[in-house]
Image 1 (cartoon, rainbow, N blue to C red):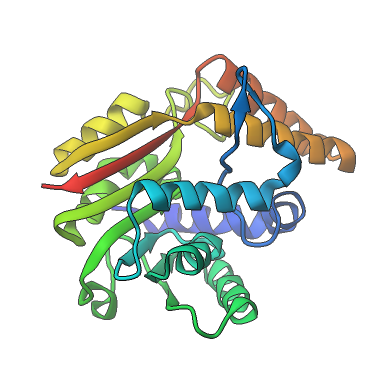
Image 2 (cartoon, rainbow, N blue to C red):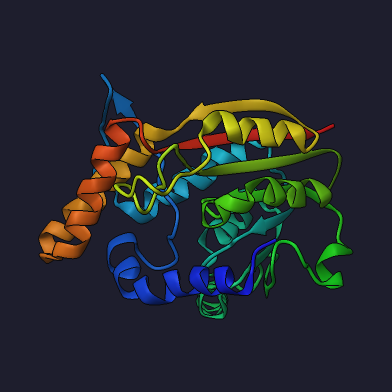
Length: 265
C-alpha cells in the first residue's frame, strides 16, 4: 500500500511541475498522446499535445468499447481531461479519483468551463482506500491513463484494486510507462520499473483475460519529441536535458509505454 511519504511525492510531482505542464502539454493534459504514422514516422505532430492526448483517450475508449451506459472509475484522473473527453465522446458516466487536491481543483474548473450536463464527478481519494460513496457504485470499466507509474513498487496492488471494483465481464483499460529503467529517472541505473511482460503478468494474475496488448512506445517517443521542441523554444535547459534523456532511453528500449485492454474473469 502506498505510504504517506509516497503520496506526498506524487502530489509534489504535479504541484512542482504544474506551470511547465500547463505550458507544454496544455491545461489538463498530464498523459501522453496518440499519433498517426507513415513509414515509421509520425505525420501529425502539428495537431499539438492536447489534441494528441484526446486522441489517446478516444482510442482507448473505442478499444475498451465505452458506451452511453458505461460507468467508468478513473484511477488517477489528474486534471480531468480524460474523464471529460470520455463523457463527451461516448456519453458515459465517469467518476475520477486523484490524490492531489490541486489536480482536482483544476479538474472541477475545467468541467465547469466545458459543460454542466456531462455526467462526471471528481473525488480526492487513494486507490486502495476508496470511500463508500465510490465503492457502492457498480462500474463497467476501470481506467488508468498514465497513473500507475507513480506507484510502480505497488503495481500488482494497483491492478488488484482495479479488479476489485469490477464484476465478471468488466473492462480494465490501461496505458502507462514501463521499464526496465525508471521512466522519470531514466539514467539512474539504481532505479527500475516493471517491463511490459510484468504488466501483463500482473493483469492476468489479478483475474483478467487480456484482449489487447500493444507496445505504444512510438507514440510515447513522438510526444516526447514534441515536448522537447517546446522546451527548446522556451530555452528551458532543465526540460531539454530531461527530454533528451527520455528520448534516448525510449530509443534504446530502456523505457516504453504499454496499452492493455482486459476483461475480468
